[in-house]
Image (cartoon, rainbow, N blue to C red; front, top):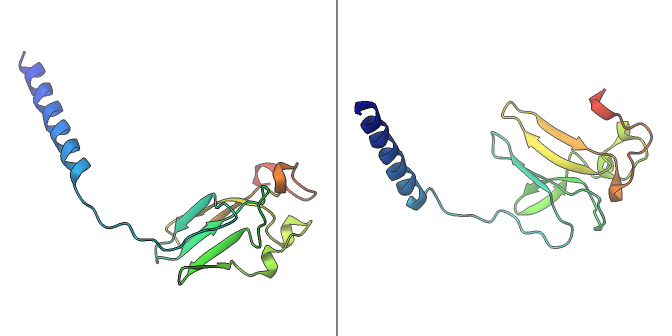
Length: 129
């Protein structure tokens, strides 16, 4: 009986904490960029506050597949030239599906090398090999 009462007290405390958290204000929503056109599928923020976005080439007109947000505008990352469609994945980005900042100064980029949901082009490697 004592164990059941302690469990009920813990459950009640957790529910009260959850209800309080649901109504607590943790900050204001701030728009840092707006997108009109190509659909981004990923966003990540580095430990220093840099913001990266990716736009896979699934059908929309995409000028660059990875961008950094600077002053509310997207800028090709790491450069416009590296974002130009290239048949060789070793020479540039093709169709990036995801970007992740790992908190250790690295930006991980998942490039499927498959624009328009096509099969990956020559030179693309499955399994990161």
